[in-house]
View 1 (tube, rainbow, N blue to C red):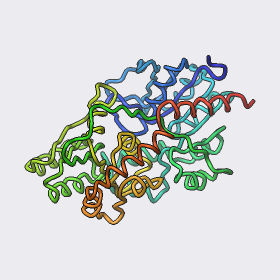
View 2: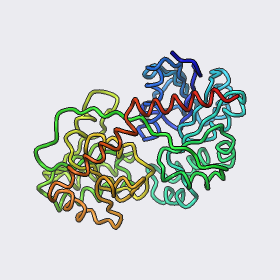
View 3: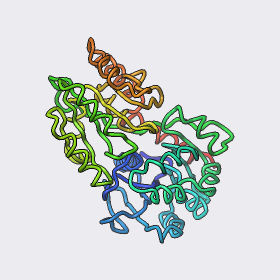
Length: 367
């Protein structure tokens, strides 16, 4: 029985639906869905996407959308919701507007991928969609009012431990933000593939460098490479398919609907190794999911030492060396087992949602 806050509003730059399928959105939808299951009344206030109505019901979450021209209406939307807690699943100007509109409520922020100016420049140079989109994102997520809102929040959290110092410095916080794990499902469907299988699961965008994965496949014809995801740039995606589909060990699977059916979990269950070739990441949900399905991690980035502890950190773009080592003497199996044990103790759905409920209750109890 809920004895603390009963109405929770999630503020996010996206939710995993209506053509927007990123890590922020998946975390937002997962948290909201599980809160609904636990008896809370849950709202999500997000930018409206193509095909999305002003008000939708998604997994029991009341989703309220707004267009860029309606950004100043976010405060009024939040006031009408009249939630006990407003939880920004990634800070944005909506965080500041909610605080101004409902100052009596509790306001929490989780920083999932805090970016300094240099990282925004990197995003600008390697945009997923367009440089103008990156400029819009910067204005929406990183302006002075957003920084002020994070400093004013009742509680600030990070989704990865390595981001604690960075977040404190970026937002000039007085104390280190606490770690709040992202709830993750680990549903095993079937068993590991009979042959070595590498899974790439993510957007096929320039910043993610899918070519590095595809070129690796050319060097390991005995290994099956499964590519799950799509690009925001159809021309780029078509180029990749036309260039690399000639290799019999590369399989393009397209976009996988992670909240429908069991394909997502089956691919992770069968994979031996999860590969990530992006030049920059926070702590991707895919790392946690892969480890939760006993996959070793092969990655250029090494957030929270995930790659080096539960796989191979290819920080010098030495993916060939890393894949050879993981396959040698079944190192991948040892790394996958260690990763499973770690994420099961921290990110497993019930444990991570218990952590969310505890911080909500704690915030609610402080008057």
